[in-house]
Amino acid sequence: MKIFLTTILLILNITISYSQEIFTVNHGGTLQTDYYSEIEYEDVGWAPIIKVTINSKVYRFAVDTGAPNTITKRLSDLLNSKIINRSPVYDGNGSVDSLDIVNLNEIKIGSVVFNDIPTVVTKDQFLFDCVGIDGFIGSNLLRNSIVQFSSKKHKITLTDRLEKLDLDQKEASNLFLSPVQSGPFITVLFVGKNSGTISTLFDTGSADFFTLALPHFAAAEGAGVFDVLAKSRGKNHMGIYGTGTDTIQYRLKALEFRISNAVFKNANVLTTPSDESTIGIQLLNYGTATVDYKNRKFYFEPFQISSDLTEGLLPVTFFPQDNKMFIGMIWQEQLKKEISVNDQVLSFNDIDCTDVSMCDFLLKKHLFKGVGSAMLTLKTPEGAIKKITITKK
Picture 1 (tube, rainbow, N blue to C red):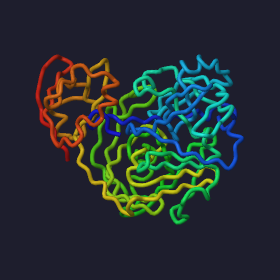
Picture 2: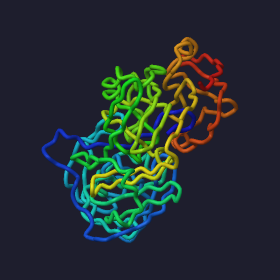
Picture 3: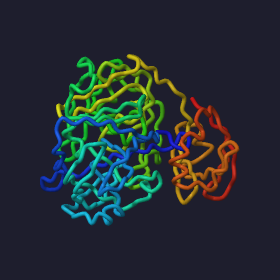
Picture 4: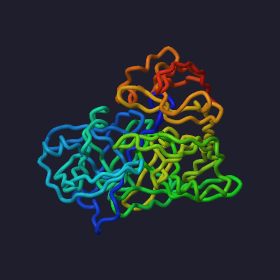
């Protein structure tokens, strides 16, 4: 997702390390059978937010298929949760920290009760407080269910009976679950001069449409399925541990890719330092997705068979730090002669950017929507002030 202009991407997938001795969070579940529950969700642009019940109290959780079940430390302390393990946990930038894993005794989603779910406890509550959530519903909780996401109805359907959903088997493709936390991977076909497939995580916690892992980009570079638009060094992703470190990244154009029977053309693609390529929440703008964890199938019913995603992009991205906004990446070689990474953005057109909290940066994502060009007022690290006009291309 482009947040607070053409900014960094918010990617909330988190991955438990494989390096430890065989420990997975694929435990617990529901004793209910023949269940069917429709849950309304709030669309905040990067993950669907639902209400759940724990110990008779209602909480807000994001449904994040790219993450294991997760709660804040504040909620864990309130529940007096039992620690069952401690594990290295990676975010979408590849940053790592060791986090506690606790047993969540009971959580109710719609009419379905889940028990004894291994749940990661985050140390930093900033992101959760910013968007007003208490945790993530992760794929290890959902791993024996069938979950349908409908953006038209703003509803998530949770069931264990496929026949309760009106699905076309022609829209089905194989689903693969990661061994440690049951992350759902689908096969995406890319077509250009040649063709090839990429195993891709369907990640409702990723705000972008498609992000390409650098190892996958390296493997596909000679296949002619991506046009390289630009190369830059800096920051363009945000995970649960922050914006990460400066890395070399690429802006690409995916000539054509296919998910089930749906065809997408001319999609803008950013690479990510993660080892996993992702299809994010924006997929739901183009159809209804059903993750059949139980039977290892993925269904995508497109609103239309073919979609042209051609869109202009501003030649810079931004990142927040210390309640200020800075140039994070520059995507035009000529522009690099005029501005630099880490220049502070004082204003964007007539909008004052001298006091921008991280929450403002994340939540005011529509403030600059539709802007084709902008006048930036910048301040260099040495204190010089300059103005420059940037234009989408």
